[in-house]
Length: 542
Image (cartoon, rainbow, N blue to C red; front, side, top):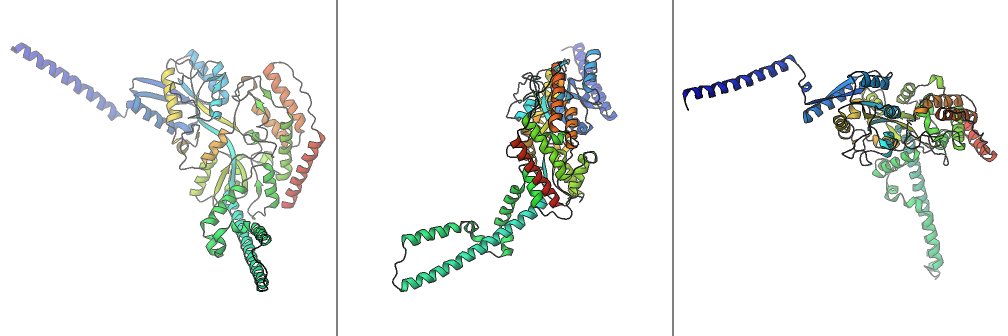
């Protein structure tokens, strides 16, 4: 190689090194300036949301996602006022629109019809019962298509003071143990007396072990069955029994038995329970909010069908709904809750103070109670259960809202947005509640730190999603007014009739007159018996 060629090679090497050093210097300078390196990505997608409580969590998820995919997710917290209208305007008239957005399932109908929520291409098959319960899947369904990914939910459930129930259970179990012990001792004395009598007969040459005697002995054994179920615990002293595993197991079983499965059982509990001085209410909830009231009529009202998207399914005024809301109205006389002076926050504070035994709560209550425990403001244990039915014949069903991630139909990055939406909803959800107070809709989410969520998840699975029929979008406001008026004394039959006619007129665009439903006298008499018992019980307990 001649001298010129050597010089050329050296010059190329020097240039290459200079370029590498320059690029490194630029990168170092950017890092020293504190620039966000993640903004330099192979692609950028935008997510809009309205709840500030999600900010830190979404930022963490976005960073983790970038580190594994080199795709930057730009987050934007926006106002919830005219949320969809803003997205729609920006999508049509400028470039500052989201590729995806978080929205309540009740707005999905409007979003889909305006082109903002596009059909999901579920290539990874996460929109199945392996990942989500039927309620979650119905919540994101519109016209038979999945138009979003379920992210987190809100629903109601029964919250109770476990400490008070445990006190009752311990007293009852110990009383039953004493009774069984006395029965066993009494049976032993009877057996000894019978043995003495047999001894006298035997001395006189009488036959022993006859079939009659055997049959009689079997009958005696049957009388002792309850005592025998206590097994060796009857041989213990009271102190030993109270410290035994059997006592703990029996108390736990009794607590679960005390958790009411119907409003009737709550009324019976209120009638029989001698409440501590600190307790002001056996059962109290926010009667001013339809979210906590809906379960009374949730099983008998139908709006939009299972997915809440069919305008042809409107069934508000029927016999069961009338009967359910008559029971609802009667509870005002029993528990005397003032709608205009009661809020969810005030009810929860009373529960924390130990003034309420049973109430209806939403998912935020778990974190609220745990924080109160840490701050030594809550001196009790609590438990959760499913929403109680009204009676053996009238079931209850709570309502739920599922917040989900929809893909903007106007976006040119729908595929990338869909991959991230699936990631945040179905893959990266383990820490959602701990960091945001939002309960993940994904069934795979573990609840090791908050095991009560296994029951709350079950309540969600049994709930009915808020409907997304666009024509009846004001249904919830009207229904809340309907409940309030009935609570204050308006006739449930006529109030429901008027509501049904109004909603059907909105949906069909034509005047509609419901045929008046007359409740038969036999059912009215049964209802009166129930009312009188409840009212009498309330008076006596007071």
